[in-house]
Length: 336
Image 1 (cartoon, rainbow, N blue to C red):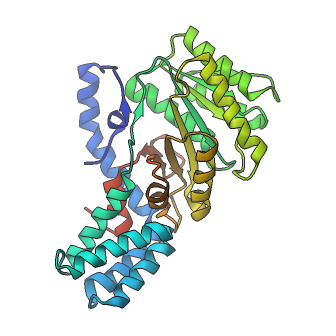
Image 2: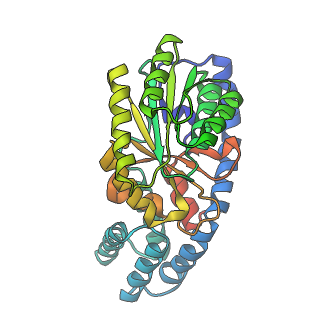
Image 3: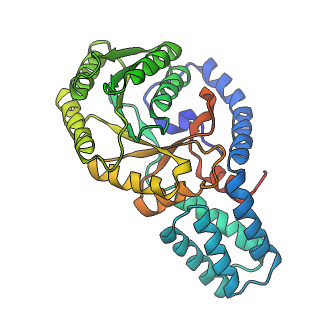
């Protein structure tokens, strides 16, 4: 069953029974609608990968060429060489051992394996600390600030939580205004500093204000940076240390936003960012229209970092909790 927002968050908050019942009634339709859109957005990846699976596993004789073609198709979908070798090797061994017989069974098993890989680690977000501090990091242009705004909107709408945003991206003037617009839209407060001020001081102040205002969640927006910029990457560690000084145990969650269209470069970004700061989860954006939809598997399979959220469009509702089973089904062409 697809995940909803309540599944994503670990919380002590109890929603009113009427709100819970209404959400439960609306959620199946929302899930179906999102899965339909996810299938559409992964169509470029699925057309290439699904066609190859149809030709190799379902229509042809399973032989050495089958595994070579399947391996090539997965790599082309940006599943990654390491993860691909693991998947194809295991599938081939099970077929050779007689554990799986027939193309349909092999295809179903492939879907299960991809979902299992994508489901690595703890893919939930614990919002029980009061306040919970979430630090958002990523490369410029990945949709990080927009993701923060949408996440704040859902935290307010789905859980009724009091959210404060910290505009610690002080190097890009438009970033503060963009975040302020999202704060207004989401109905939450924002803490900002003068343009060019120290990001650590803004993050410190945001956590301080969150504590004073009784916020449930504080989300810190950090300046977008290339993973190759050593000085800016080091600054992330500084911001993290400053936040920890203000509140013990914070930041409780660090989310890295990755643009799905960058393919294997996204994997490298995730690797280098996770070396600079502990990354708890990935937000995979811009899945709409990319032929590199397998990157979620590469990140999960090779780095062990769970994908927690995905974005498939511009609307607020186009940010959703990541569901590994839905992802595998959409990737391979299951319409159910």
